[in-house]
Image 1 (cartoon, rainbow, N blue to C red):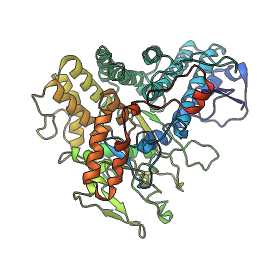
Image 2 (cartoon, helix red, strand yellow):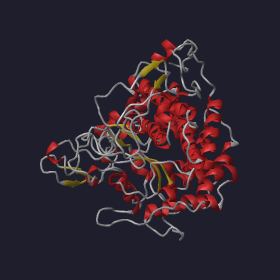
Image 3 (tube, rainbow, N blue to C red):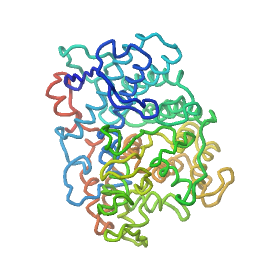
Length: 535
C-alpha cells in the first residue's frame, strides 16, 4: 500500500481493515486506481476501509474512551504518577494523541472522498450504489463531527487529494463544517435501510443517521455556535427515531449471567449478541490479535475491573482499570437504581486466588470505583489476550435518543408530558420497573421548571451514559465544562482520600481546554493554519 503523508492528508491507494458483519473475506491482492472500485464487491471493500478507522486505537479502539474522555466530572485517570498528558489536561500541541486523532480522522475522510469520487465506476444495482454512497457520506460527516467538536473549525476537504502541491488550507469556520455534516448525514438518512433489515449494529441504518443528526443538532445549539434553532431540529430527528417503531429499551435479561436489563446491554457487547432495538450503532471488534488481523479492541482491558494477575487472565480477563468514577457520579445514583453497581465496580479481585471480593460502601471508596460497564469475564473467546478482545463499543444507544428527545423537547416546549415520558422510560428501566407504569421512586419529580428539568437531564446522562465517550463534549456544549471540572477537582481533593490525585485534571483545566490544539506537525506544514486560543 502506497502512503503519501501530506500535512493532515494521507492519500491511500486502498482502504484496509473491515467490519466483520459485511466483509468476511481475507484480502488476496493489492489494487490501485480505478481497478480498486471496478465491481460492487470492491466498493464494499472500500467502504469497509472507511468504517475501519472508527476502530483504530486512536479512536474507539482505545484512546477516545480511555484517554480523551478519561477526565470529566464523571471520571478520572486512575494513575497517581500520571502528571502529564491529555488524561490530566497537561500537554501542548506536540502531544502524539492530538496528532494521531487528527490524522486518523483525516485518513477516514480521505478514504471516503476516494470512494465517493469513484462510486459510479462499476455497473450495479442503483439502489445498492445509493446505500453505499449514503454510508460513505455519513462516515465522512462523522469524522468531521469528531474533529469539529474537539478542534473547532478545521480544513474542509471534500475531494480526493491527487497531488502533494499547494495543499496549504485555511480552517473552515465551525458553522460551515457543521453545515456540511448536516448535508452529508441528511443525504444518507434518505437512502439508508432500516435497522431491522440489517440485523446487526456495525453498519449505519436510517434511524442511526437520525439519532446522530439529533446529537449533531444539540451540539450546534450549544457552545460555541449557540444556534438555538437547532433544538427544534434535534427534536424532529429524535422523534423520527422514536416514531419509527424500530427501537425500544430492552427490559429482558439472562438472570444466570446478568444482574439487570441494563447490565445485559454491556454483556451483549462482549458476546457478539446484537440487539439493534437497544444498541443502535456499535464499533464491531473481532478476535484477539492472534489471527494476523488487527480487528480487536481494548474495551474492557482499559475500562473494566482491575485484574493484573496473568494467572487469571483466561477467567477474569486482564484489565488495567485505567478509569475510575468520581464521588460525584457514585452519589448521583439513587437507592434502587440498578445501574450503579454495574457501572461502578461492586467487587475487587483477589490477586492470589482470583476470587471476587465484594466492596462494602463507605465514604472513601465512593471515590475509587473502577469504571465497570464492560467486564472481560463475559468474553466468550478463548484464549484471552492480555491486552485485546472482541468487545464492541457503543456509538449510539436508544436510551441516548430518548434523553436527547427529552432535552430538545424541554428546550423547545418546556418540561412537557412528552419530555417526562422519554426520560422516565430510561429511569424505569434503570430501576427494574414496568416502563409503561408511573413509579414514585424511579420517575422524575413533577412540577420542575425548564431549568430544573435541564439539570435533571444533565445528571441523567451521567447516570445512563457515563464512560461512553460523550460526557466531555456534553459539558462543553452546555457551557459548563470548566466550572464542572473545577467542582469535581475540589470534591476529589477534599474527599477523595487515597485517590485525591484524581483532582489534578480538573485543577489543570482552563478556558483554553474547551478546544484542543491544532497538532504541531499541521502548524509547521500548513502555512495557512491558525492555532486555537491559548495554545
